[in-house]
Length: 404
Image (cartoon, rainbow, N blue to C red; front, top):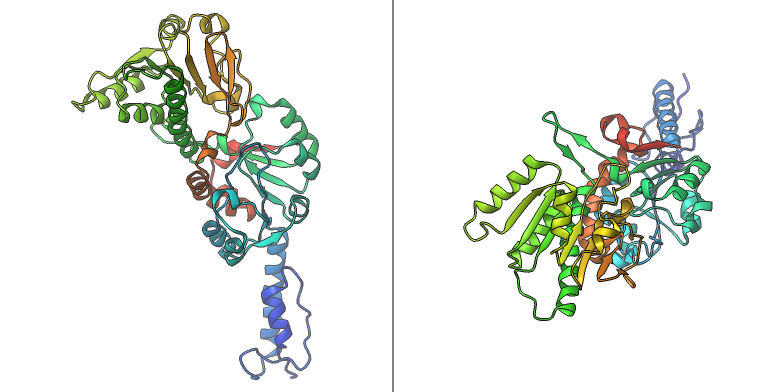
C-alpha cells in the first residue's frame, strides 16, 4: 500500500490557513518533526478533522475593536489582556489603530496579544463581523454596518429612535449591554455589564456636582440638602461618595420601600453616619417637597430597555433653589427632566431658570483606564460565546439580542 507523508508546507497551512481546506493528497510529504511515513488511512483522518476545523472557523465571527467616535469618549471596549484570552480561544481579533490610546493602551500591546491591526474604521468594519464597541454607533458609522455584522455595545435604543431605525435598515444583529440582565431565584436583578459603569457614573457625578457647587456657593457647608432619585448602583455610589466627603443631609427616594429601608439601616448601623440618610417613598408630593430644598440632585432611575419617566417636570424645576444642580445620569434613557437632552463634556449643562442640568451621557469616560478595564472584564466571555455561536451558555444574552 502506498504511503503519503505530510509536507511541511501543509503543516504550516494547518496552523495559519484560517479556513483553507487541505488537499487530499500530498506526494512526498513528511512529518514536520521527522520523515517517518504516515499510513494513508491516518492521513485521511487528519484531512477530515482539519476540514471540520476549517468549517467551524469559517462560520466563527471575527472580532473588531473600533476607535470610539462619540464626543469625549475615551474608553476602549476590550483591553489587550482580554484580547489575548479571546485569541487563545481561537477567535480572530482585529483592532483599529489608536483604538485604545486614550485609555492608556498602545497598538503594540494589542499586536502582542495576537490581534491584527487595521488602519481605518472602514477597513475594520470590512474585515470583522462582530463589532465590539463602548457606545452606540455614530451616524458616520451607519453606512459601514450591514447584514454580516453583529454589534455588541451600549445602544440605549429607548432614547434614540433614529439609531434603531438605521440598525433595522442595516439588518445587523444587535446585542445591547444595558439589557444583559441576570435574575436570581430570589428575584434579585443583576446587570453584569451595566453595573460597573453605573457605579463609576455615580462616583464621578458626585465629583462633578461638588465642583459645581464649590464655584456657585464658595462657602457652602456640608449640611446642604442632597437628593438621590433612585437607589440603584448609580445612586448608591453617589450616596457613598457624599457620606465619605462628610455631607450630613442626604435624602434617598425610591419606589422600592424595603430596599431604601435596608439602605438606611446599614448606614445607621455605623455611629459616625447614623441619621445622615433620610428615606422617602416615591410619590409626587414627596418629590416636590424634596426638590424645593435640594441643592444637589442626582437622577439615577433606570428602567431596563425603556425610556426614563420625566419625573422632574418644569413646574417642579420652577420651585428649586437658586444655584442648584441636577446630575441627570438617566440621560442615556432620555433623561429625568423635561428639559434634558444629551450634552458633551465640553459643554455639559442645560440652564433652566435657577437650575443647571448636567446631561453628559458618557460620564465613566472621565476615568478611561478604570472604566475600560471593568467593561472589558465584564464582556470578554460574552464576546467569545457570540463569536462561536454559543450564546446558549449565557441565557441573559437572549434578553439583550435585537434580531433586526
